[in-house]
Amino acid sequence: ARGAVCRHCQAATAAAGDRLGRVWADLSSEAGKIELHRSAMEAIEARNVFKLIDVTLELKRAGLRVPPKVQHLTFEASVAEEAWLVRRSIAAAVDRGDADEIELWVEQARFAGEDVSVETAYAGMLRWAASRAEDEREIVDDDEDDDSSSPEVGGEGGIGPL
Image (cartoon, rainbow, N blue to C red):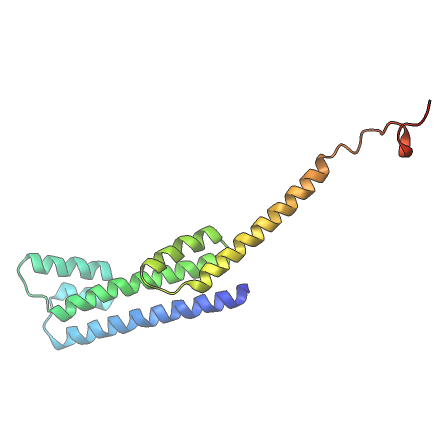
């Protein structure tokens, strides 16, 4: 099951990366059509969404026009980058078999509207397997706690007549 889930996560990460790449390509295309401030162009070329957001806000505060399409694509780049980072984090947690971390990142993806049913089921399976292993350890521990080393009174047949 782990291999199939890992392949699913790799595909979801690749799809998120493709979406992010398309947004950056759209931003580059849009920036090429208009005269955009040099610092915004640098942020787009570097694919640095944080710098692009900062530059966009600074330009607006300075009273300079930032085309609505660029503003929209900047927002899309931010959302797409977060989705890609979350998908990478889920894939890494699945690879490590860490149910807690899978659930943490799955919750983040769910808030963003992602379908994470496969990952949620896998985390549940990991928890189930861990609880079974814990139950088996408890049984072994209980068996070891038996005081079978103390001598029995009367041997195999119990207490015999005196």
